[in-house]
Image (tube, rainbow over all chains, first blue to last red; front, side, top):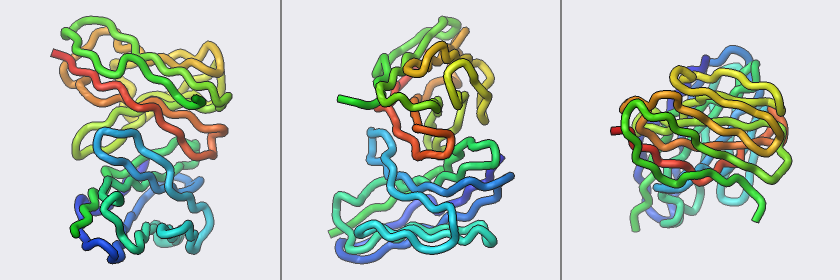
Length: 109
Length: 112
């Protein structure tokens, strides 16, 4: 199985940058995903990394280091609507996707 | 609207009762999944199916069963509900076992 760790909560100011770290241990690796989940809603896909390096998609970027078992999600120019839970998920050698407990980001004015 | 439909949206159930959560997708995705989400524990995989006719156990399969008779439907059955199965259940699908997951809106189940 997987052991996926990410901080429980983070708070940042509107317009700022926040970095959410995720570390993992897995038997086999077939990609790392980041999802966003607003309270009471379903998770929605944000990003996918399977090779080392940075993937940029608008205000959101995701980084992966497979050798270190480490990823981060970078949220730039924070907006109030970015207040949500951010879920790190790892696909193992059997292609099952396991999720971390999630990081609740609160954006303050 | 294309996507994943779950039913019921919410249900209160007496312990010991049998319950089936329905999940249907119209995206012709091969893989489907059932997760439960509990506060502080995140999403945990219950069962999955990489293609019609096959199923597999996830992290927390005990007390649950699934079937995948066709591509579109993936029902989750609780044979005899217990209070610890109180949770929000999410069905998800992906085009292939390697793809991103698309989630249904969730089914909130309370077992008393």
